[in-house]
Length: 100
Image (cartoon, rainbow, N blue to C red):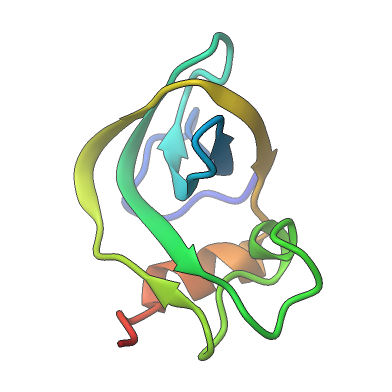
């Protein structure tokens, strides 16, 4: 796990999917259970130019993706899966602007 300067050492940067087809990025220290509390959460509304949505955890969003602004705290419910994000993906998520 790579530590971002603004997060706790125990936090993981994760990509989370939900039963309602939500795809979210954020930081958490607990991935057990069917809901996950994410800090600085962002959602990916549309991903293009990637080889599947899991590329959001390895490469992060690209210029063709639509990413919403960060919410201070968000509870993802009906979690169907999560993946730890690579340092490259974290940097891309942190710098991804909203694209209309």
